Image 1 (tube, rainbow, N blue to C red):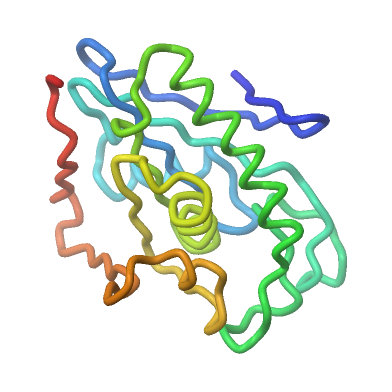
Image 2: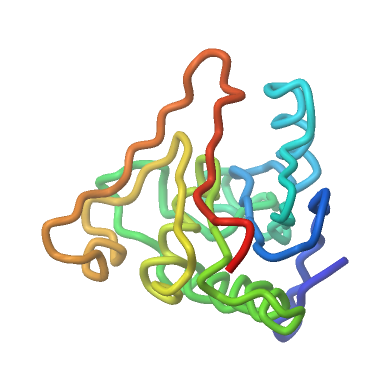
Length: 188
C-alpha cells in the first residue's frame, strides 16, 4: 500500500488488528531505515509482531532524499537536517513537506472510517521528531503522540505549539520491553 501527496509516495507495511479495526497507530522509523525494518526490529525486541485486538499498526517508509549529514547522499529520511545536533536550526521546509505527506496517510485512515481522535502517531529517533512535528504542529486532535530515543532542536517549532506549562514527553522502555500499553479503548 502507498500514500501519495503530489509526487511523494509512501510505501507502508501494515499489521492488521486481530478483531474489528477501530483505531490506528502510525509508527515512523529512524533515519536510513524503513517501515519494514522498524517492524522487523519491533518483532525482534518483542519476540512477536506489535499487534492489538482493534488497532491497525502502520509502518510507513520515508522516501529517499538527499541528506546533508551524509554529504547529500540519498537516504530514507523524513526530513533534511543541516547537522545532527540539538543546537542547529530545524530544516522546516523539508519537515513541512513531510507533514503534508503524512497528513495524507492520516486522511486515508479517516476515509476508511477511523476518527482522528483514534489515531496515534509516534516514532523512533528521527521518526519520533517527525511525529512530534506532525502531532503538535498539524494534528493536535490525534489520540496521542509517542517518541522513542529522539530529540528536538532547542528552538524547535514544536515548542511553540505545545500547551503552556507542558514539557516534551519522555518514554522509557523497561526490560523486558514487551510492556506497552496504549490507551485507545476498543469501543467508542
